Length: 506
Ligand SMILES: *[C@@H]1O[C@H](CO)[C@@H](O)[C@H](O)[C@H]1NC(C)=O
Image 1 (tube, rainbow, N blue to C red):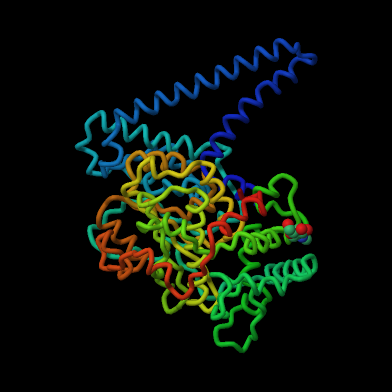
Image 2 (cartoon, protein in one colour):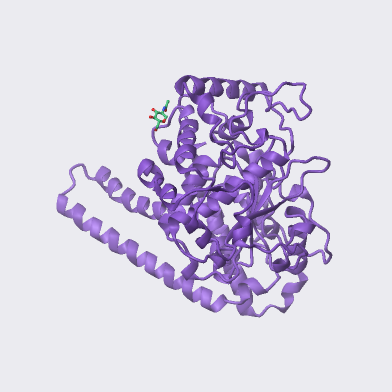
């Protein structure tokens, strides 16, 4: 379980920690070899290792830049894929394939396509380098995460299977983009949900009172019952009942326990990651933590500066992904176009995003009558420039909020129109992210048919906006957007109070 949350933060963290840990590890080894190390030697060794590391990083950087320069244009424009040596294919057992290597499974299993015969030697070399890098990264031992999740169906991210027609892809290709109305519960899971529900009400005596004030989408007079954050058990005679709805706080507790990997011992779990990765925490901690967050941060607030950040349509919830056949439990769609940020203010940037995600959960809850409550995110890389990029610190703070408080609410992320640099970097770093998160990221290929097929499946034919070549002519207007009935207004001062009241998130 800790493995999964450990690396579900951004790739930056993984890379920096791996390089610093290797730096730290080596001197320790020397200490073991010589029983009484001379301080001066140790010091010299330290400088040597530091220099060595810097040199390595510089050299690697230079090599990557050169390769990139040489292969620019070749890597993404060619539709040809090259199979890796067959030796590797025999080694690939079904189990491994399903885990980490699944990301590149399609490519791996293919022979050289007819389309490759036209390749120039240089192009061939570039393709080979690309696949080798992917291979290398996906084989690194520290990258592998073998946890309970690996028996899940995998997502075929970034496949370029060119069938030449506009058929939508089967929904089973995107297992996390759709959620069934009723999830099956094992007796073990049921008893864990009951246990945790009992524990949280014991350690937070005013729990039941406080949770009514923080429904999904925020507290307002006409908030639908289905948007309760903590829903009391509903009678088994209700028409929309599910095993989860018959348990107090079932929907909520299910998501937390799932991310905790259904622990045997509720007294020691390693979630939330930032607070509990080392020592572990009792499971109710995570729920108390989110209760505090929702009361203090008030993720539903709309403020003047948020409107300024979102003036051009940086982010908005609009429409719903299709449901599974015959069901009605859609994920809300959140459209994110980082290139359209009108004002870069980190705290309010994050708030603007969080508010849309919060709203998407609320609307999905409402649509599904309290059974699902999830969102799918579409990210467009169009017009994105470095000037539109939030700082790493801002990104980390945002990721922490999502990880800690929007537990298991993310369906799938579609990344489209990514620039070439972004795309190559992503392909290199995707293997560093945990399977849990990675299996939810789909890099939409440039191929028109394939792209259309993915959009139709995940977003729904009628939801594809005109700016993506679809027929949904919704035009974002900032005033109209925040004028809807469910908008809850606040001041910019209120919006920043959390920085001092909950320093954990600042
Ligand atoms: C819940 O959170 C509050 C605020 O941080 C804290 O004072 C309290 O001790 C926590 N309770 C439990 C049981 O963790």
